[in-house]
Image (tube, rainbow, N blue to C red; front, side, top):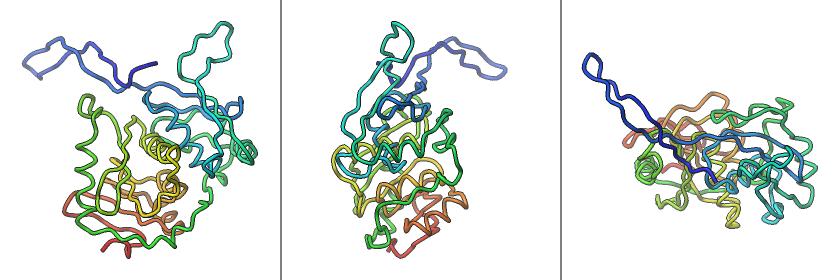
Length: 274
């Protein structure tokens, strides 16, 4: 299986001073084909590692895996070329119940880049999937000081970022600021899928009373994924988009942006921040 980082020969340049040959560690990025019941569903670019978590979280965000037993099994498999070797870049998920029907309705036919989690859907109308959870009923409250501390706590736990400087992170935190799970990836949406998939595999969905802290901006797709996992609070270190704020308002997600320690903005459902 491919490692999450790779070493590469580089030239270190000091302008008008020197050029030195050295080595640098890069975040790996490879395609992952996701199949549902043997049929191609999507292709995403990701950092190898926690791939089953990624697939599980992706299927949760698509509304295909809702119940704890909806994913019967997952396995790596080779591609369809003759005598193909297993590259660990194809995963087939066996789905129980009505998930297969939902998968057929939402099947994707082009790849998803590492920067976009909703590229390639056959229909724009299919983007906004209704969450199975009533987030407005989640009356969790979080202290201002907790929200302000989360970006640093997330950053301190980013082991791969320390060596590459090129990975996003997503972390699940309790209301008192305790880190419960973290995942890293070159794609913001992949990092969220991985941490949500981990929670799914642990039987923890919906993530009632939890905070999802992300290292980048808060896009529409991240709000969508938070809502599908039952997360009441989504906090980002950078800006949200207008569409993200609109969806958060409708879905009942508290959306926090520009979280920089002592300051942050609350865009929706601010009553949860006390």
